[in-house]
Image 1 (tube, rainbow, N blue to C red):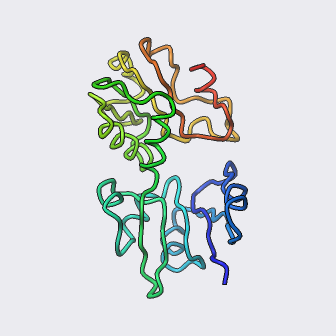
Image 2 (cartoon, rainbow, N blue to C red):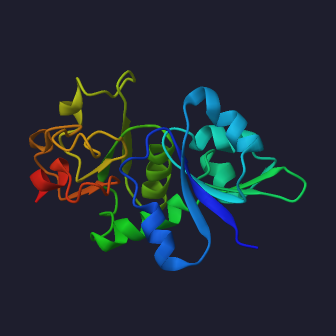
Length: 207
């Protein structure tokens, strides 16, 4: 029997996940686009075996899991949910591993340097935790309403790395960017977790 797999999120028009999984295996992989008022019901009772979880339901998925890995417990969000035979949910976070590999690919974190992460949701929280593990001296999470926000970015002009963990700039709104990188005059590396379009407006400015 083929596994029923897929991706849960609020808006998934940008996703390339079905194509990626079609190349990896012979299981069914669907997009499950759900509103906030539908997400709980789907996670608990949806017709799936294993799903990935993306914006904005990673923290919700964590809360609904009966058991999670140590990684997920530390980060308090999951991006992989397995429905067990008894109907309970098991969760894992593989984003941390993937993000660490991405940081290594762009040259790693300069020991003791300041890193700015745009967005403090599930993806942002994971990125911040990984950067701290990798030796960043200071990791600042920027949100729309927090103490560190888009109105006072200049206080972090000395950041050497900027990470976008928001959906700003994602297809179809490809002409948007979360910040103007000119604020970060000493920046040496930029990572955008958005992969569609490629490159994003933010990465084009970084280049």
